[in-house]
Image (tube, rainbow, N blue to C red; front, side, top):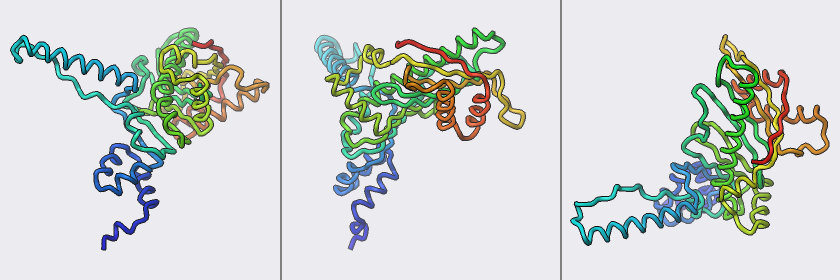
Length: 313
């Protein structure tokens, strides 16, 4: 008797959920027919992406690959095969949506990108967490470093560049990665798009996912164009706090620490400025409340705040 066959299916599915890594689970499918069937029912997945490619990009890649093959065959007819060679190309990578087609009961999904999106000056560290529905709900940004020995105006301008860079990166992840996998996976209740560098995180909860699906249905299609991204970026209100130096213990100081809480304009409704500050502080502590970053946030929350408005991009 094979005792392994006596393990009930729900327990095996739970074990696969603990593994979560899509590449490992894909290998498990090759073990036996039972594994092949049960792996597809995994509810919690981690997809590590080597290169971000959308379905529309893949269609273009396949088209150009076909043209390359056709062009090479024509040249081979008239020339010696060794007289003309085209550079080798890597196999076309699969988009996250196509990889996940093999799983039909996904409830919790983490997508890990190979690297961060921000390209800021050397010595600058920026971390962020953005929450989305059909569009941005909130974004908390924590950064330090940047140019030294510059005036207040220059520092403010530099921080605004940080904020714009973060928002562009977050909206790109939402439009090109997150929205592409939301529609086909109707059981999804949590989606996170992050990167290996730990630079930023885009999250969608059950309510946000439902809003995203409703917006796609009302629009008639899930457009992935740059114009669609611009139309989805609302006017925002930013509350910024900045300190020249923040001591985090043992004589260690961080220079140019900055905390920014971004929300769509009017998201607070009729609340007062004091209530807004309390809500923003709670959101910041909930995002970076632990470890070194938590100490920096606590120090920044005691400093003066500056409110800024930015129109839709």
